[in-house]
Image (cartoon, rainbow, N blue to C red; front, side, top):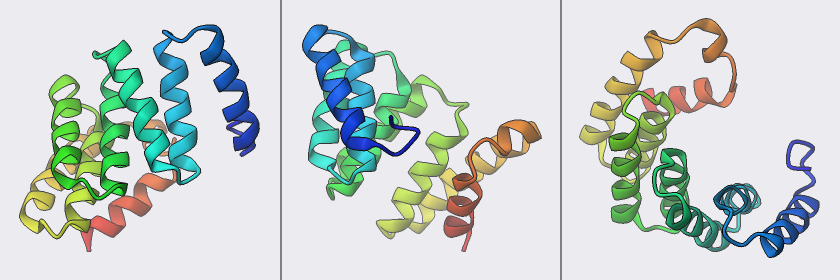
Length: 146
């Protein structure tokens, strides 16, 4: 449902799954993604936090928690969540790009440039197939590079 942008159906299906298995971290994580995509940041925060409590070694959950916290104007905790994600997986280029974008929006240009340099180094090492998976990455990259 999510891939077809049928968010209400995705939420209903995932909430049913969560009812059936409340301790399955991936359900909470996916609910966080759907809520984040529908602009429901408070709900996304709830589900990403639950996902992290159930599986604290999944770095993408920390990155999306950071994105959510940035949308909720909690810059300090967003930065802490990005740092945790990067500590767990320093080679994920998206962590660095999203962190740079958050710093850019917050007006922290120097820290933004540092993160962007790390991202650019990782980006150069990726193959073309990986670079072309998500067409939003070049757009975000262009925003931050200005």
